Image (cartoon, rainbow, N blue to C red; front, side, top):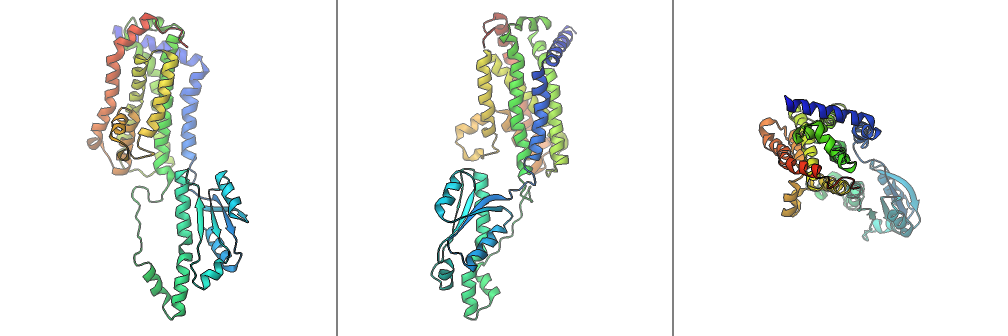
Length: 391
């Protein structure tokens, strides 16, 4: 009972501290809610549309204008301007005023009619991989009829059948069945994971700030006195108010993404919400571990910022870990966001339930166990006053 009393005393102390400073309201309430709103609306329809491109028509014939109309009709594109030469279009592309352009050379129609190997060139900005891939794919699809037209016209002129010729040119038709995300909606596989990637940085920083504030302003001993010297009660009581807020926001985020935004979902709702709560616990535990190892406030904030940034890459969302080196894959296993991303993918894409996800859930429970082992070190550092007033 004494431990419970100490825990409640620290909890009340931290609750009063949290309510007395606006920075906590901003970081614990407003920022997470803004992230939820931002990530649930940023992708709009979920597909890239109206990407600005340009056309360079050096031929200016009926055929070139027909090609330009076909490209302008592609929903992915928004033809924002026409250029007189390739150099002007290239400079606009380099300045990212446009993300691609089609170049129709002089004598294109004449070369096409006499079968002299008419050539169309298109250029696109590939520094942004997602945009570059969309532009390339849209150009390929938009120009496909133009590529086939000369051969079909020649065959028809020689007495061939147009349908037969098209079958000869395209002997196999692609019948695509996109799994898990049939509408190719970016929001379906990016919104929820990216929110939690940014959310973990916020959880780490707030947790570190709450504990680092004690050493920065030399109040660590008062913190321990409120817990009657029990470091476990001190840490749990301090982190509980933030855990309650962050867990509620994680559950709210899942509800908005899967019930309001309507991301396709057919797995276990219970396991999804449980994994979100365990993710908050694991992330707070990582903050405790880092603070126990680097209790100097300015140093640990830098370390946490680095850990949060690496977590975005090592989650496996932006680049598959299977394509990274083995050392990087082992390092990725140290980050809770990696295991949480795997959990979400199993639940959302493969209808994962508790029986198939328990091993990854167990990995998230290792983080609080590691934090528990470092609590004696944390207590010694607080009592030593070694890092008090370090900025």
